[in-house]
Image (cartoon, rainbow, N blue to C red; front, side):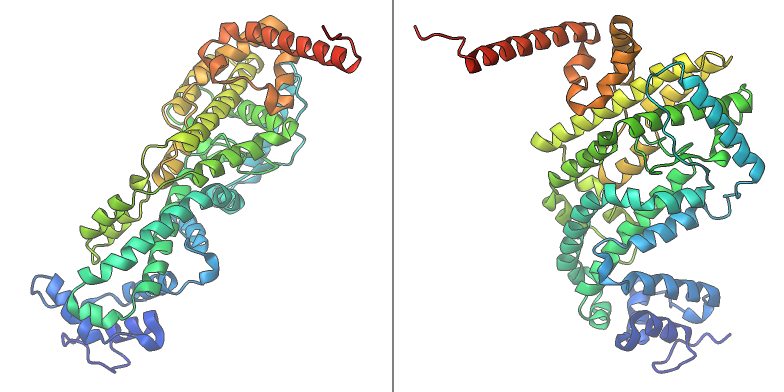
Length: 456
């Protein structure tokens, strides 16, 4: 191969072709790009002829996609996010065979029959699916977008604005002249960086989640979903029979789905709380500006860190803090109820206690939802008060019975509060006091309407 540098206008030169494909008719002069590359390389000549042709092709496709994605997608490139998520699981994602799917279906059917003895809530009566990791990505991406978009858009717009305004002055003079107006390109770059990061996080999540509600959110929609390959990997190394692992996880999935099916407001409120958090998010503009000053525009890792986002979200205050606390409380109540119900239903399993301890430790120490949201938007979704919530539900059941416990989920107005998590034993006393006050007010109102009070 020739070691001569590219010459402008050579249709067969790889560097010339790469930039023409990337930028279309506004392609910069490759000789100017090469001079800039040489400057960054400490004087060592940059020889594009030594580049692997397939690597050039991949770079062209990826960069062109990043720079010229449709503006209709908005500041975040969601198609790129889905593509990246699928690429993250590619090569390590066996399809679900009919035997594995039958095992899941049988486990969920058995789980529902056992749950009938542990809760008064009716079965969810939704389709049962066994997904590969890629199928989970495809089927849940729209729900992840709905939950993360308000937060990610706020971050993307603030970061892109700061980078667009400040970055051009930090580029080498040769590259500044070659790139011209950087604003459209940087907007695409910012959206693409977020898309890549969100896609990678969801791809990593796809390799960890065990079911459709494993994150605490019903991201699988109106389906009872489980991932056989992840369940198998989760059980590897455990001194527990695979069928017991599968049945225990099926119990948790079926229990959560009963909650969501019998309490239609629950999924809506969880999403609304995330969106409320997003609405109150504030971006530390000064931190962004400082980061841009130290940004190396020729270092992909530096750019990647710049667009990580969560480092620019200060500690929440006011309404935003209240939204997070409400969200954490609701997630804890869901997981605590599931823990109590599944503990009762799973009594026929020899390894139930060991599985319970393992799963609760996994959730409390930071499950997949925490890692996905935390790395993207700084939102920690651990059910921190899982043990308090489990104690509360047990206390309510012991005092008032199972039917009373489950009827609480009929309305969000009846749900326990943070105060109840602080003092589970005092829950019933507070409820009785509130009921007495309400009855007294009703009686006073009735007398007033009936003319029962006489003027003095």
